[in-house]
Amino acid sequence: MSINLEKMSLPELIELQNNLGPAIKKKQRKEKTSLRKQMEELAKQSGFTFDEVISTSKPKKVSKVKPKYANPNDTDQTWTGRGRKPKWVESALKDGKDLDDLLI
Image 1 (cartoon, helix red, strand yellow):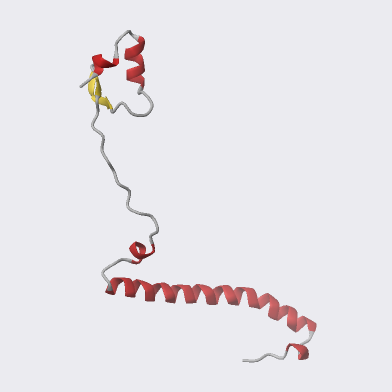
Image 2: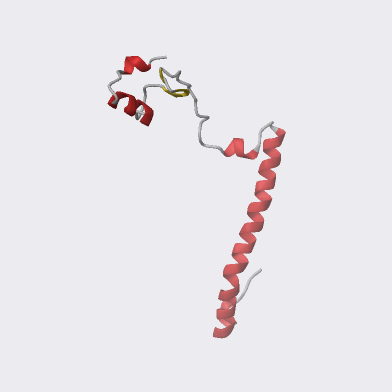
């Protein structure tokens, strides 16, 4: 398809310009949708989901640290000894207890 821009009038060129942006965006969306479907099918044939294939993050290792301390008033409240002290630990320390008193 060849359009001779030299033969077009200024209003025709402006109309073409105004129609060109939305037409390009529509075509891009259509192409992306088609390409994504093809990629999803290819991933499926290999036993993966599309999201698994394109994921750049590694699965996070979750290492569970056992709690070292427990609240004597509520044993469901525990602390590993890492990070910021829970309020119940701070309160116990303020009341004169030692961390060793809170050991599990």
